[in-house]
Amino acid sequence: MPSNKKDDLPSVGQVQFLTVAEVATLMRVSKMTVYRLVHSGELPAVRVGKSFRVPEKAVHEYLQGAYFDVG
Image 1 (cartoon, helix red, strand yellow):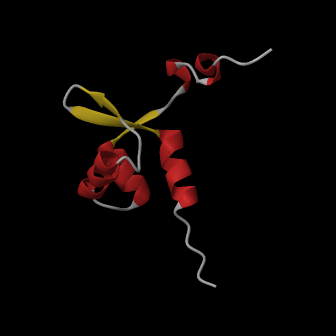
Image 2 (cartoon, helix red, strand yellow; image 1 turned 120 degrees about the vertical axis):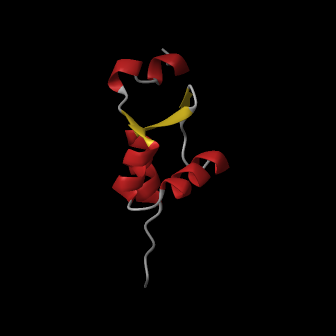
């Protein structure tokens, strides 16, 4: 039975969202850097009113992909 793409998504109650300030603290960067990542599309975010919320999983995935191996 083929899976429905909508069924593959976690429910809203299961997703943990972080504020831009929380993401900046977690990544040890400025809030401006987080805004740049969001606006460039490198970090997905949901707009809530005038602010953004970033899924916690997206932050962890971004950091995993950002590791640089100096060989």
